[in-house]
Image 1: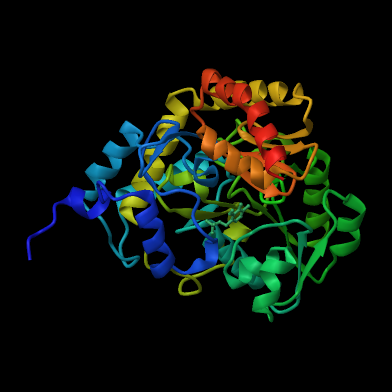
Image 2: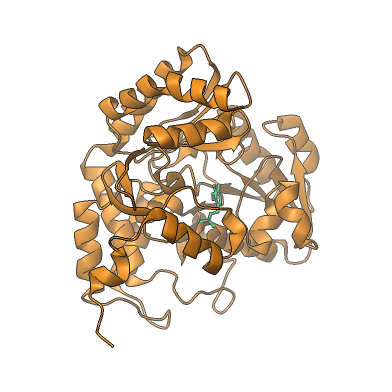
Length: 411
Ligand SMILES: Cc1ncc(COP(=O)(O)O)c(C=O)c1O
């Protein structure tokens, strides 16, 4: 057998989208439905499909590609780490793992005694947080509180915290004790949290529910209520963290110190990595040797990718760009007559249409060369690379009226 070159193995050059999609249908599990396109290449805020068509990526791999695609600095750091040391077990550590933990503790302004646990995804970071909450309860606090509309992941613990019935029902029984209370309702939170509550899990902005921000007042009250009851406050910043909202954490505006936060998505700039950060000595000591683990978590390449991503965000004025382009997009969207509401912060944006055509709009946008997402029948979500320019944002605003009228015609 002739040996394949690296390009032959990975690029599948010359194979059409149609052929690849047929092969997908026969070989991959259908949990995601049919893929919308086969993407073969990316650069900056653009990607190309197997037929050579170009798209402006306004979803960024669902809030993952913080620095866009094929970022030269991130690529060079990953390549150099990979060609030096690719993986070690957690019987060992590596310089990038330690440096990333230190950097994360610095950017989230964690108090002394705070610690980091590395996982590989958002759901795994939340599993670790769930176990932290169980340890805190010492058998005396069986209750956990999460919000209606919450999305925390698909593994069993994270799924128990997730509220959507369609995701939960096929997999019951889920780990018990989770109560879902109304969104942004301080009185409901006060009523739900007591001496039997181990933890409250909150997303500062619910991304999957259509980009719904919790108020600063709610976050502050949540801190007070949980502290008074002796319960942990755990913030899921998997989607909102790492600059997505124009700050390292979306919860920064509330100026509270939680007991833990979870991160993933943008952290690795496209490379899989998740993290649980515990705040302060008391919380950090809840999980001790042997109580949790993962083979891949904190591996040298993933932590190098994250270090490079954080470095580029910090040194290339990315947070300022997020604030400026986010503001520009939100105010331009608000002026469109078919847009009824615009929500979000920085470059995590949700907007509602005046008709239930969001899924059709996603299709029409693809045909017009834009990648969007529809978390609800009339809601569009944007979570583009944090390097999106004003000109790229404007090209989308210019194209949107035609996209929406095509979607309405298709209905
Ligand atoms: C807030 C939040 N938490 C957790 C997750 C799960 O992350 P992952 O898909 O990496 O497991 C997601 C994913 O969308 C999310 O948005």
